[in-house]
Length: 203
Ligand code: MD3
Ligand code: FE
Image (cartoon, rainbow, N blue to C red; front, side, top):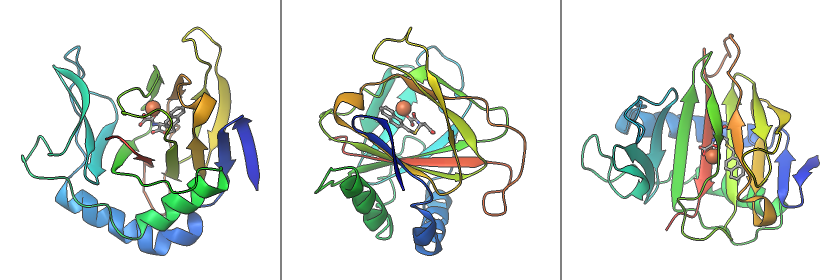
């Protein structure tokens, strides 16, 4: 079932589930090579969520700001390649939202333990805002905050569950968004965590 959040934002409930037998082991291999870490914010604090990346470009944060980098700052090495099983998931979801030919070059993987939140922000570090973002949620459920084009617009609360995929593009690409504190719990696949990974065309 395709539910619309906005004109160009769709929720595909459970769309990742059939991909997980291939996607989950591939995700574990990425994390074994480039582990989750708490990056520094430009303001000098540690981010509450832990993240890593795969693909040609990875999103990084430090005292200099936010940007995409071809190297893992922890090792100076390239990020792990985008695993082959990730592409059919990203491309079929994008196509169901009307974005044919999506060719992601970046996959940002976020890990939330209970109590972790992500405050309202826009994603503006990518080169072409005409390209969609595909987001996959695994493990503990969370409430996604779906705002407007102004920070002050009151966000809608959208629950996201294990296996849900959301695609955001077009007029909805620069919406403010965030994640409410993740409730306590454990999930059979992820343990006490929510994992969200987003496919992007960053370069
Ligand atoms: C709406 N991550 O990594 S994914 C992020 O659940 C981020 O980890 C959240 O926001 C998470 O930047 C939300 C969904 C998402 C991603 C990009 C968007 C929603 C978006 C861009 C525009 C509007
Ligand atoms: Fe975001």
